[in-house]
Length: 242
Image (cartoon, rainbow, N blue to C red; front, top):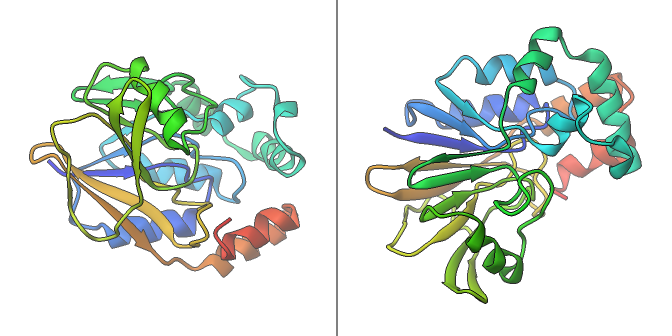
């Protein structure tokens, strides 16, 4: 069984559709690591689209904020505006679906968390020091996270150290006998200076991971965001990947 690993779609339907097309025929099930909504113009459509598939899905911090499970004052001004718009425009079916999602679960030999195993909703795992302390917070060999919008791999060295690896796209990465934290990056709002949608493929039988990137029609999403008066910064950042 081949898995499509995605995270941080953020209501960007054009990016999601391009990922699904790019990976077509190469996966049997989707594992989504959260933040289906927020920032983008198509929250209901993105939720409906992933539900077309055999799906295992987490909730992210933006999903929680839309549901009122987090104080939106903890978000920046642009994010708050997007959250308020989303709260007014999601359907009851979308709201109910999001409300039923966990923020962390185990699918041995994998642990899945939106942000980190230590703080599943909010912590960013972007550096080896943060990764190193997080290995103590899950017991499986591997942990998949999202939230940072940055594709990365961290390998456990010891209780105080982890080794970071940058992604190599389109090249199979065998997962060795050690312990790893892996992030597929963001489908709908990349933040690693690459505007292309990011995702990964995982074969849990051969234990092979593959980072992928695919260009999508950014201008299409930007035009839809202008129509609903999303903040300029949220619109412009999509073309630069920050």
